[in-house]
Image (cartoon, rainbow, N blue to C red):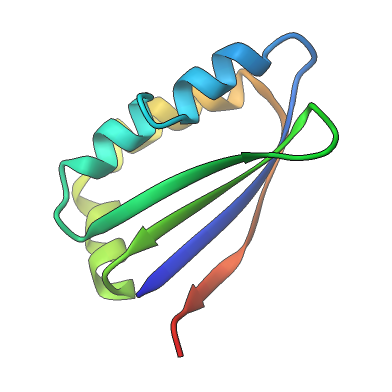
Length: 98
């Protein structure tokens, strides 16, 4: 399994819209779900109400990279929506199961 973890600081007042976009019924998960190699996404809210993590699980790094190429136009559009809601976005890293 291949995992991508992102951290976000959300603009004040944008938390509900951010949770709608990145949550289990949001546009990100809907896009990911079109790809069988996507194994799931979790949205976690931190102890500070403006801080979130996403954990995206994929079958393999190759599957994830293929998704990025194939979904690029839609990925970019959704990413721009998210950029309007966030003060910062940081990819914590990618991880593989041992």
